[in-house]
Amino acid sequence: MSLKNKSKEAKQRQLQRRRDRNKSLVAEYRKYGCMLCGYNKCPDALQFHHVGDDKYENVSIMAGRGNSYSKLRTEIEKCVVVCANCHAEIHASRVKPDGITKRTSKKSDTQLGLGF
Image 1 (cartoon, rainbow, N blue to C red):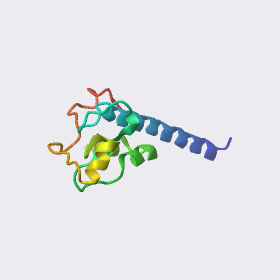
Image 2: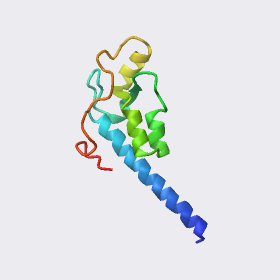
Image 3: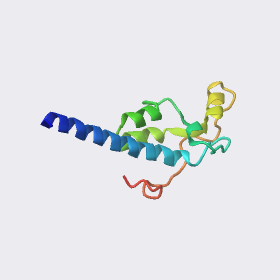
């Protein structure tokens, strides 16, 4: 195997580790459920809704792309976790997430079990 292929394989392994780490981070934030209605049966039905106008990128895209932990965490902190139904109602202007200005927990990474 050539040195170039080894380097490519090492990069792929690193990217997969970052994706796995990001998936864990996203799952940790989703485990609290929808901040509006409390839904928490299926984590895949929970989404990140950006509060304010400072959105850089969709959280799911960043996580899948393997963005750095700090960039992903910064973007998540701009969001609230809501279920798909509440998210649709927010964007249809039927529901306003009153009183919710930023994401949930004030816990540190270590308290959340995310000692990355």
